[in-house]
Length: 378
Image (cartoon, rainbow, N blue to C red; front, side, top):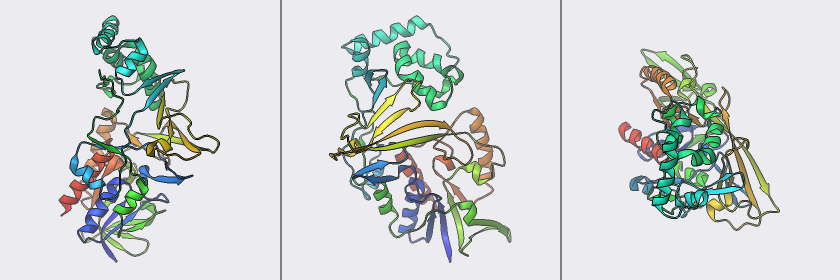
């Protein structure tokens, strides 16, 4: 059989593109190397609780068209992301806001908070930050940096803040209001039945094959001046939509791009109905190896007699492990540009998503990019 598109990766980019092209009557097939669809937003029910297997995902956007688009496939609840940061035995609201500053210094008014931060920044006398630590100190002062930025950032990147470039942190949002809503976007929530059910609805009518690695399944060969794409089952494809790592597609021929990875430890607590009182608690001390603990039932206001928690550990990425987000710096961006030049010689391949386009996307941005590309394809 001949297909118009082979879509590699059943995450949001691949699934949105597949839905759009299927609706247009194109013949599409979607494969994923994992045993399930939905990519990193995959949710699995445990004890009646939708568990986010690959870290917390809260959908948020200010784009009404994207919000209307996802609401075709799922009913969203009214969850508001309000994480808490724990430093030793002290708890602080995130993002940094008046509740944070009141707890830290006892200040009550925005003017008092601004004055305290300005005083600390002035005392440091940093005029030209040379690294991430100096950059952060020049933005928020010593107290906020030491308690809420330093350890968490060092765990995320696996390096001391003094060894990280200043440009990683362009700004640190300070909100001088009593509002714990982490996002500024107008629309926010989580699918009531979980993200997997949402993606299933997106892929209704689309042929999906899981447990299938692209490099094992597909062969590309030149024939009569064009690239012929066919699989081990004898099917052929006019185009490929590739959402995996762009450097892996080219067999790392120009070298490895850098990625950060994550490791998750999930535990079902049958004798506890409320472990931490909040969906997300960040642990900002470097001595504690995980960055946050997720209690999944709070994403959906669960009333189950038990609970499920996940500890999230950042990790350096190595070949063969799961990459979660790119490390965008001058060195990697320059290497990515070289891979993009190779990609232009493969006009039958569309590279999409975080890994294919080597940039950090929020969920709404991924969908917007997929819809844009589907529209261009006609």
